[in-house]
Image (cartoon, rainbow, N blue to C red; front, side):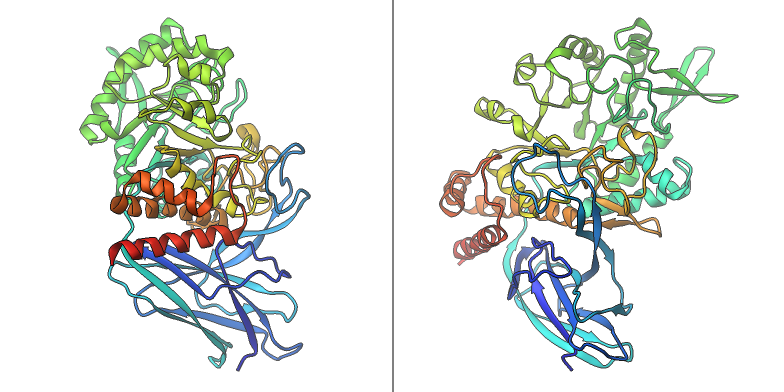
Length: 546
């Protein structure tokens, strides 16, 4: 016995193979929450005839899910001018990949630790108890056994109140798995990936009515992937919504509640129509696209014909009131006129559905062109000053590399985890990231192997473009960053649980007392402070329910 030496660590640590990471003595959470911890282990002897171990984690009420942690190449940690907390600014390997673990033997070493990640979903009614963690050799002999306390706060985690979308790329699934777009195999794989997103707090799904005009340069094209099939008839264009119906049904079965329709115009200024295809006897043919100016009569007539039919279909599916529309992603103030003209072409037909788009310019927002602005984290300040009761979302991407929260591989996990507190404090209603599974080079020119290339071909800092890796069986392999994002949203929900008991103003005062003044550009990035904050939140909840 004790041929394996093990330690427990928080989910905020990125435990390196040779690092002596801080240890923890317990984990805690609310009913309905998934809490995590890590186990590092090394072989206690220099030599043995069995360097392998089999890990088991047992709980009388929870069903633990175990992952094996492995490193990912961080070849592009950050830009030269990036600021704020980073683990490294030079290329290296960093723990990120969480491969699902069954009971297969894992090779150990006496000088390099192996790390396991454990998720514990806490069911309603569960009580505090001890977890049993055991290591056995391949013959079943016990190598080591340890206990870890799970403190359960008898408060139900409220339903998520903040919309959360991670842009979903159908073409990347097809390229990675070699399946045909919208084939039976595609839907099997897509369902697994959407279910994985929902389990980690995503409730809104990018829906490609037409192929998304996202991350492509002028005249560039993504793999065709529109959900509405168009054919030409004697009386005009016919729209077949059957694939859209199946998509929506699948997404709702997975737990998706809200839908965002991919932009109808090209990115960065809405100068051209989205790429739209029609079905002909000769195959798929471009109907509208880069040769179609956004304000052309041809496109205006098409939208006037198509959009009312789409709205009726959304109504029939029961999702119209839960649907958002995009005009064009990330317009600048210089592109205001083209964006305004494009917006005026679709809004009359949307029957009240809101328009959301990512933007940074406050002057642009003042023109009242976006129903719900999705504001870059580092440009929020003027928006928050006049927000009042209006709905504002925020987003992060590669450009949010200076001070503000983000989820690059090279960032400490605390820099992402603080997001939940900030979303609550500023009363932001939604969060958008552009890359759930973007496994392409920049501008979508070619597919990449995300296990080897994490930076979109040196296009974006490592990890910016995706939160999951492709599993061999068509299921997603999560990243540490995805788990941290889930925990950030669970922090928000836990704060909402406290709000239900003491009110929002009292919660805001409690945050100031516990964390001090925090903003999107000034917040603690050390693990201990955030772990103590969450523990203090549990103690405050316990005090309120006595």
